[in-house]
Length: 109
Length: 112
Image (cartoon, rainbow over all chains, first blue to last red; front, side, top):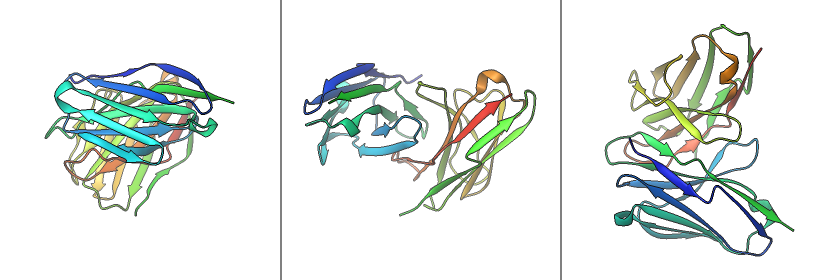
């Protein structure tokens, strides 16, 4: 079945540093989405990026479909960025979404 | 805009009990999903439905039933609650063919 690998599993940074999160998938993804989850909270969609580069605020996602990978870059991290980041992908016509295990990000003051 | 509501927010049941979780969306989305998230873990797909009365099994369907009564609602039934399935159950929806999913706030299940 399709697999999604996220790295690193956890990341600890100082406030102001940049964060780089990676997502690799085992089959060609036609759809790719990044989510954020605060501890005890639900999932919030950050970026929907099946290919190319997309920006929103301090977030940049780059998906290279042929290489089966996507990255999420968070610039000038803030304490409120702490939480878990998930990527999720779907193969064409499948409708079945597969999530990675997440990257737990901790930003320290 | 739209919203996904899940009821109840907290569900407490006895071991062996049959429990039902409900989800409603007003996005007019075709596809709806049920996921289970164990503490500190990722999401695992239980069931999904691409249209009214459709049902597709996910990776974790054993021990669960689901029902898509109408386009806007998707119910999940835990057929016999077990202590090892205490988790948060998340409902999501999306347009057909799109993975841009929107999530509900979740139902936290506790089994005594």
